[in-house]
Image (cartoon, rainbow, N blue to C red; front, side):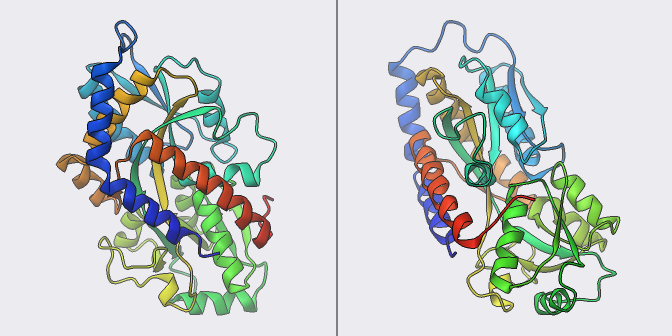
Length: 334
């Protein structure tokens, strides 16, 4: 189940090739013609999560930068529901004309394994544009819960099997899968309570509707700093510069635990190649810009730019990997 190390290596390679990817994309735009007048009207950027969630926090500044670069409004449209399936389905069915895009989290590649009866194909029905960012997560609890470490949480959960509740940003989302992995590796059992997005999930924890959650860094960190939540561990193998005082879960008695979320940009399949190339070039510029790096760092996230081909390979690899992981771990959607 130590699958995410391969993912992180792939992302590192993608980040290292960002400059080359941008150059290739720019070359394409010079040799291939864009559709006449494109973009001649506002572009819709669908975020299949609620406003304030981790994907939304990346999509909104990205939309602002793209609006300036394309000299056309890029409007964020939040469409949460069904583990990001609602928003993804909207884009899969949209015209492939470059005017509808989809911002997705890493859970996008796990959805086919967890929901085999999807109305769309996660690979066939989308055209990858670029990876945008990589985001660590935090294991957090309500301050009233009598635990101050990962091991204390595990001990409490084992003493009360099925009596602790944990929230997630929705079925099959990254936070759900991260907690399922945590339970699988520790042998504990908690009750899953899904919400429509990362912000509602964390708010439920703050309100003590649930006791635990595995939230993205960007969503949970402000509340940890304010004292409304208690952080027990980070989800990555290494400490995060955003909260270096908190040790990785893998160093806290759960060896092998390593899970991060990423955010990327997709278009409907058959979107013209010149449009994909132009968008890729601009996204890579944005992701590697000083301004975007600063914005992402403030949220505990890291910029990643990749070519569309590299992003496609990553999705294909992760879809196959998650199918194996879900089967071997016996993960099920409630």
